[in-house]
Length: 412
Image (cartoon, rainbow, N blue to C red; front, top):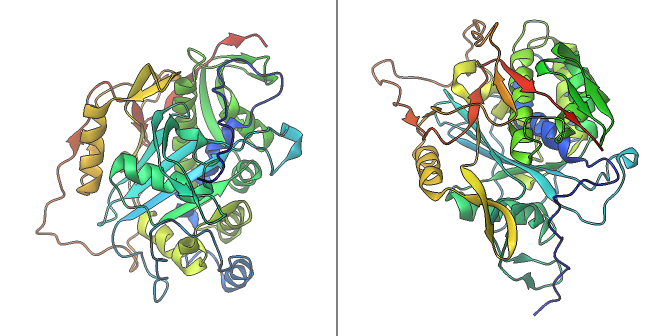
């Protein structure tokens, strides 16, 4: 049996240096931000420039054939499943401090329905204790399967192991994947001219040296990174609270991308596409610009109400000798049965431990998007599928909901 790397220890205490967990925002780059890339907006020069950067030879996923690129620039045909992971090693920017472990502390799954009318983004808590798949070790053998926290999957086989582990957990086939680090957050927020978030109570987190006063705050560059990293200054100080805070940011980003000054602006669309290309390590199936553009065209017209961010159903517990987060199997079965059957979902619970609805402006209406020939064909005689209501114990929000962060003062 091949040698097994030392299992990273669970990390619950406060660290003496900033922890790069906020790369969750980077999910924006590969998943939601892909919305902003359109063949109409990215001109010929931009497409040429990006195509010289997007190359073949990406990461090969376990047990999957390489997805073929679409024959032309049209909306992607059928459902889309993309896994995006963010590593906390800070390899992309030494300013955040490097760590001995190489962990996927952010893991998200984007599912776009086959009719391109709804999108669901599932966030998996980093301390979720689940079976980790047996994955190739790069030396002709395999790391053994184990029960551990999901964020060690990157250590035991890289991006392909994260994908295989999530496939086993959810029963979904995931042909597309991307791994990212820090600088995409900076590039993304800069490209759209900043992301405006609502702060219900001021955030003062001395651990990462981040302060944000109450009210509407527009975040650009490093401030966006810090906002996504902050944990002890949000809600109850848990990683689950941080997930809801990140979902609030992602929802605001989706809304910003859909504004007239961003969507359809050739300069901003190119910058968004460039941020995706420059700051992600992608699967072979995403090493093609045509594929990325086709996926963007498939999702760009989904309404805010039909973009749902949901935390994987779970609760605190102990397993495999570790304290962490355990799957709530009944609720998870409802969620993933719906997604496997390509049914939209409806939230009935709260927004999460770290956020609350904005009392002054709780919902936002999607802008009217002109019809395009690239939109997925629909049959007027076929009614839209009914949404599956998730249990009230499952937290999340839609992009149509304005949420505010519950800040707090946290000492370092």
